[in-house]
Image 1: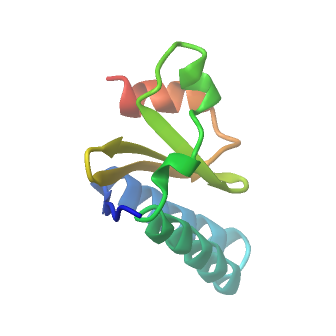
Image 2: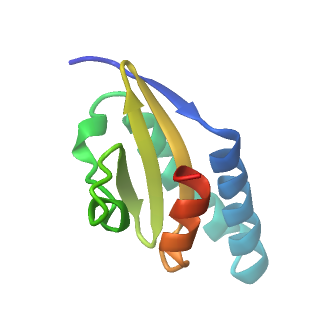
Length: 108
C-alpha cells in the first residue's frame, strides 16, 4: 500500500487550535484533548488510504471533485490528494455555514 505524506495547512492548524479553545472554554479541557486526539488520529491515518474519504456534498453538487472529507462528527476534515501528498485544508465543525466557508477557503 502506498504511503502518502500528510501536510496540514496553516489554516487547518488554526482551525484545530480554535476547536480546542472553544471546547475547553465551553465544555472542558479533558473533552478538548479527547476531540483533538481523535482528529489527530484521523489525520495521521490519511497517509495510508486517503481515497476512503468522500467528496463533500456542497462541492460535489457543483461538480467539484478535487477535495475529499472524513468525519469525527460533527467535525469535518477536508483534504486534497496531490500525487503522493494529502493536504488537509480544513478541520471545522460541520454545523457551520459550510457553503460560505468552502467558497472562502477552497474556491477563492
